[in-house]
Length: 106
Ligand SMILES: [Zn+2]
Image 1 (tube, rainbow, N blue to C red):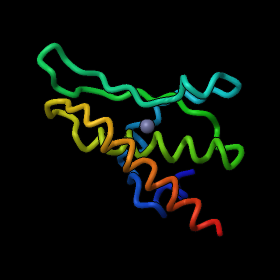
Image 2 (cartoon, rainbow, N blue to C red; image 1 turned 120 degrees about the vertical axis):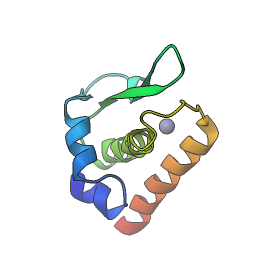
Image 3 (cartoon, helix red, strand yellow; image 1 turned 60 degrees about the vertical axis):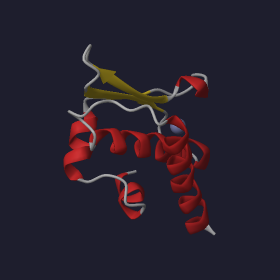
């Protein structure tokens, strides 16, 4: 998975190490549970990240992982800053990465 992500310019070694103990991989749950969850202090500062993803066992799950890792890597770079939701922009960027991966498969 890391190789796929690096090819899409998502993440680096430090980030993957950071996420390792903050990521739960679960299969056979409803896909709507998958996601990246920012942990924000009472003062509104982004402090930590948690992620729930499936194992990248097929193309569909791999796309979910790419999507969520895109969110996680963005937030990783925003740790210690005021948390900004920016939902639409974040979703757009995650979908662009999904599409980059799909195009590379063709
Ligand atoms: Zn998303």
